[in-house]
Image (cartoon, rainbow, N blue to C red; front, side):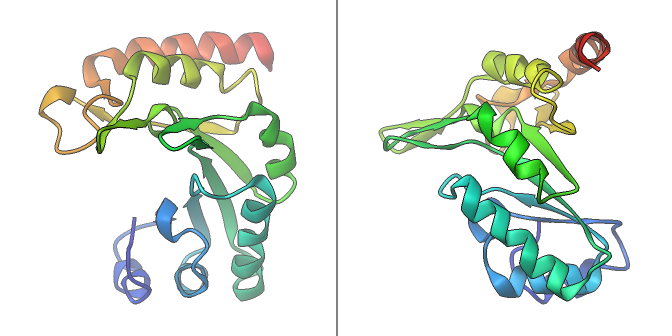
Length: 178
């Protein structure tokens, strides 16, 4: 992720693609600078955006760089005041606008209680395994050797030692649905 427009140019010599954070996903200056400097961008969809609003983001990118490939990372939408949920019916709509849509299995499980952000790593694994069924183009997840010791998102991260098994299961699901 980058958080200021001028960082895109600064990062260009070091990375192959850039990711726009969810809370800045519709900021024109961020999107334009990303597209000026990269031909591959992932945009983390803000939980405050409808699918229609998310479809308009890509216009800013393509108007700046017609060769840019833009991928949307679905992270859920606000449900009530404190919970993110995935609306799996959005995928076909969003795929009309983006080169691909990825499912963020970890952030999409987040909710807040008394000002603390929490998540559900077990639900995250289930979401990730559902991605091929709903025809997502890939998954996005967070992992850590010991999630309880992670700096952030401790409750929604998947333990590193579980990733190989999760990906093996994911391949089995993909083989059944593609």
